[in-house]
Image 1 (cartoon, rainbow, N blue to C red):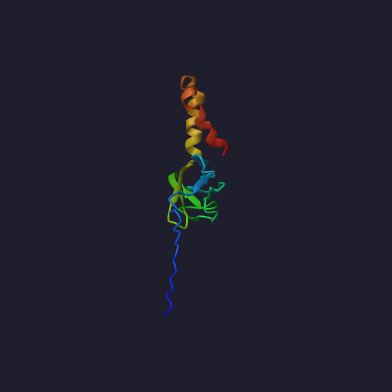
Image 2: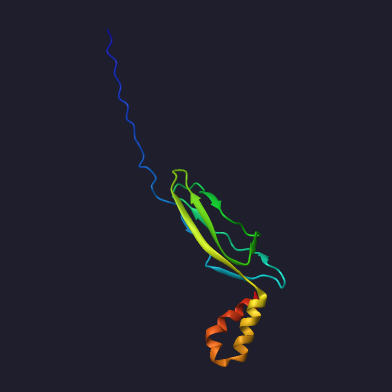
Length: 128
């Protein structure tokens, strides 16, 4: 009789618990709808993400550059998920203003010099 034996050595890697790293998440964006319109088509540089596994994370997003946004504030999000299920997010707001509102506020500034400092930054929406 022969006696035969062997040993298995199983190495289990540490589980991946590190979420992807987001790059280039935009600051809040402010745009003005074209004259007479109630929406605007907007673009921005999309955020990206890297993962220590060197695999590209899967991205889910609420909106994409080139979408139409109506007047008001919209929250945009990107969720990056790696193969282990870890996720990282990028949130930012997109505000679309009305050209007429910008004009009214700017006229108020021109007529009331005491209000100039309070409304001065609002005039930026005219140049978008």
